[in-house]
Length: 101
Image (cartoon, rainbow, N blue to C red):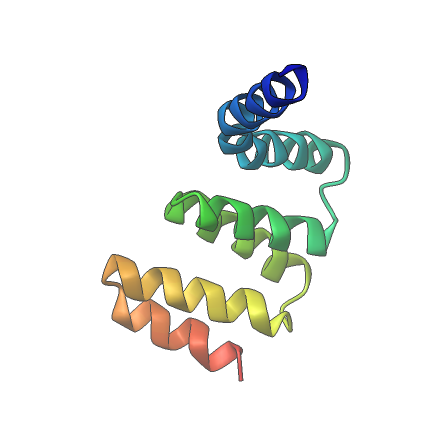
């Protein structure tokens, strides 16, 4: 009986905390980038987290930070193009895609 209560408690705990893990990761990454503003991959993965949570404009800004540091970061350019396409900026998306090739 005690084992069943532990399992139920664990499941409830995980159900309540797992939705906050991406938000915590975004906050931690944002704080890290304050100390390491030249971290190209940090900006890229911060953009991935933001995009995953649906913050497209903030994600595009993070990807822009990555490509400002490394203009040849093809995956960041591709993701900028994808976001701009979703936002309806097809001309900007074409330009971003041209850098991703």
